[in-house]
Length: 290
Image 1 (cartoon, one colour):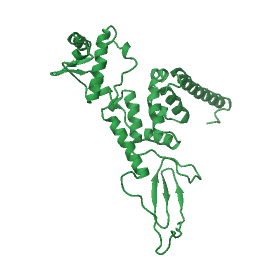
Image 2 (image 1 turned 90 degrees about the vertical axis):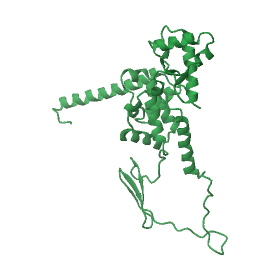
Image 3 (image 1 turned 135 degrees about the horizontal axis):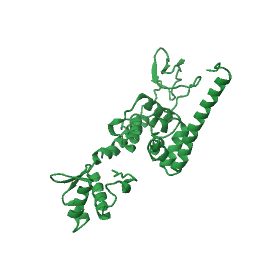
Image 4 (image 1 turned 60 degrees about the vertical axis):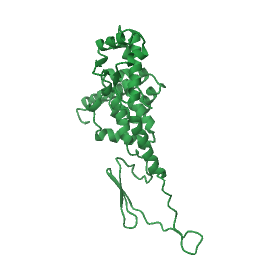
């Protein structure tokens, strides 16, 4: 299913204020029609279908205010190709999910491998378990059973832990970043940096789902305090479990933007208080505390 997204501040946009409500209705219906086709075009006869007898008049009003741009075959919805996700985004997400399922559950149609058995025996023989050496660093984990080696690239590993944590499936990191970038209308200005990838993977390892991360990435743009203060980075939305849950709940309507703003303000106040306390201690002790 393809979605036609409309900003909730659309009615307050200067191009829309004072516009005939019938023209707004035609704009919305033509937008849905264009998204269903996978483009941003409005055929010349389409406005008349939705507003019989007034199609030309309302189309002229939409063209005059700048919501539509005239073409040889009709109109083009202004900036829709820039601010709306591609029509095949749902297909990409579905394809990424299918690849993950195929990798985990082997749903590619091939038969599952059967354990080997010794000839003349109804029960499988004992399977030798090679000694495994686990070495950990901040860059990689190396498993070396019986002279072979397997390297798994990770960002973090708790000291002394031998249990693997869930990692992001192929393509999920890009989906989270794309959802955040689209929600903020950033287009090609934002890049999937190493720091952003680390934050995304860290939250997957905490056990959060793809839906949790996408909702948090979009939810930070729905917090008025964060938008007003320019605190809308993906790194902040996924800084830790508390931040993820805060912005995820905003997106799901479980928490108001004002509550999230209070949380960010308390973070800022605590940081300032800690800085002031350390400065006071340095002055009191003659700078002995760094």
